[in-house]
Image 1 (tube, helix red, strand yellow):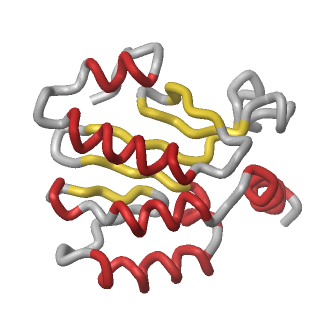
Image 2 (image 1 turned 45 degrees about the vertical axis):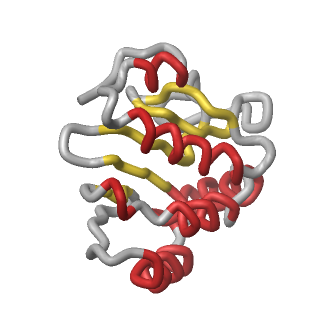
Length: 151
């Protein structure tokens, strides 16, 4: 379910009461570990973490008015989702994450290309997410993003 919130705080306030604590903890985990330069915003109806135009003026290639997306978190109908485009674009990072995940969680990894879904809210690996968030800074993400267009 896509949110119409205009700010991160509004997004969180609009959540059902049972989702607020877990989403607040996930947001805090991201913000506490987010490398300098990324900014939090609302993007695509989710809490987004982007490289702002002040750092990367070209923005997102499909819509340059938008900042360059990197991560997002969302409360959806059946799960909490954590989107990380670094996992999607870097096979080494994906391998690291999929190897580490079973060390932190009892549940099987439920993952799309760059989207990790958590259906059991008490089994979210906050320490692993914190480590993942710290692994790529804005300059590294820009280099990875631009490398896709040079192929």
